Length: 334
Image (cartoon, rainbow, N blue to C red; front, side):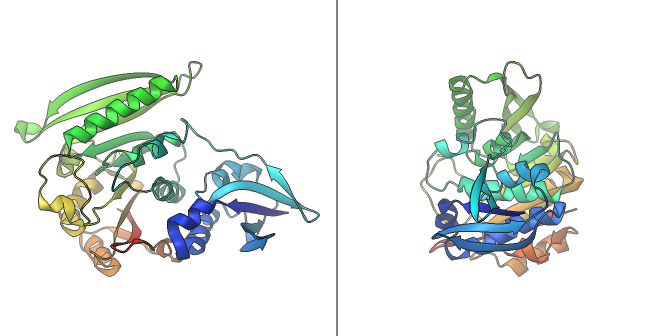
């Protein structure tokens, strides 16, 4: 049978001339895991772009296909006509949560969703996934993880931003009538090496469900991440490294220079983050290649004793964001 995935026009706006390369890469990583599709191509049907493939049956993979970031609608081709198939997005909470906040320097939620999708398709674990963003900013990656039903944890150096995350999430959950409990805690490291605050949410999809998801955000320097969380606790670590571009000051706090330099941040924090990653987990980090060449990034990771996944599809996500930013990501294992 032949299937056609209608490509969301926003995908072309996000990735410009690299859009189709990224579409193929995202789909092929999913297909590498489940091996359900053959004869994959992008076709123009009546002036509209579709990713087209053949498969015996997609019922078992419909949810994964629905979650692909470029898919707007799914069709089966029957006698030359397109028969719509209902999408089966497994959304723990409404996907509008990550698009509601607008601010200068925000990472595009489609790109954040892409990184999380790639990471989840590179691990074997399917349930009770723990996700960490150790440089979470205003929390886009945490919201995207919560949409997928992950337990989400974030570390952010700016206490004001952490307060804003907690306030926004509380108002959102109240407005959307989700059942939840929340609390705020203060704590410190051994021998008072650092002081931190955390907001903790236990969120339920509905009143009938007994399956709570954990959402936690900590106000602390990311170099203390492995002092805050247990070793090998996380299945996925995702982070958007600083781009070296000055946006309006959202923190109103003086931050050390390494928080603005991807290389310095990696040198100080990569071991710390990897301590928290489990042996079967994936760390996926995006960065501005104008500041750090991919070869330099790979060398830094390997020199620290970690593995970079470098097969073909994972090297096809580089794209231009604007005049100052050329973005890519890298996948790391222990």
